[in-house]
Length: 110
Ligand SMILES: [Zn+2]
Image 1 (spheres, rainbow, N blue to C red):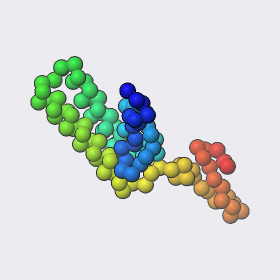
Image 2 (image 1 turned 90 degrees about the vertical axis):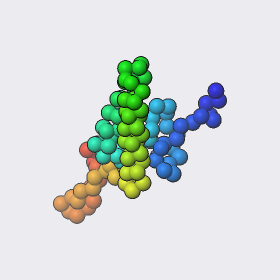
Image 3 (image 1 turned 135 degrees about the horizontal axis):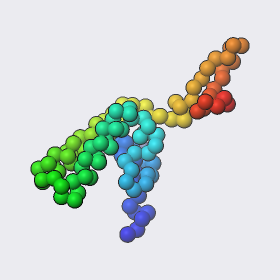
């Protein structure tokens, strides 16, 4: 298989970021999802994967697959409207006593 022809792109609409196999979104889009949606997505994925060894009936497996698909689509829909979490969004700006802007990234002053 020609790997370069099978690059996996972020599932967010319009995002061209190449991501690793087994991933759904680039980091920026993934972390733009509220924690509840991220958790729901992985719970649904795990539930659907658990049945790959034939534990569930076909009807149960189909239901879990649909749940996972629905959770995934909910995430994609959310990302249509949610701003991507950029490096700028992850910094905090505070105003120092003398009125200057003081920027912090992950708790470190710039
Ligand atoms: Zn993306």
